[in-house]
Image (cartoon, rainbow, N blue to C red; front, side):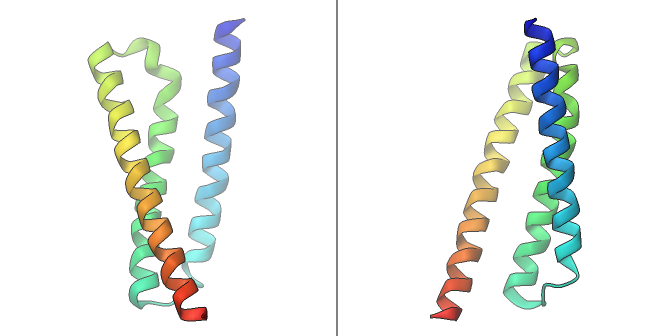
Amino acid sequence: MEANLISAINISAIAVMLICMYFVFALRSKIPGGVVGKQWRLLTVLVTLFTLGYFVTPFFTLLPTNIINLIVALIFLFGAVYVLITVRLIYRIIEELV
């Protein structure tokens, strides 16, 4: 039961990340250069890294604990950077609109 639940969650997370990847790349051509374009390129790289990380999660049981801890720590770090970039980007967009 627990393994099935974890597998279902992993598959759902991977599916959501693939949808995010689609949107990130679909919007990429519509975003102008400059600050917004530069930030979007960085967000694209981070979304790609997250998606690759999510593809690894089904294999966590095969990895040594120290590698799992490193992957989780990196996901947290890149997640924090992603949130920072996203908030700064939204802040700049709102500043331009006001």
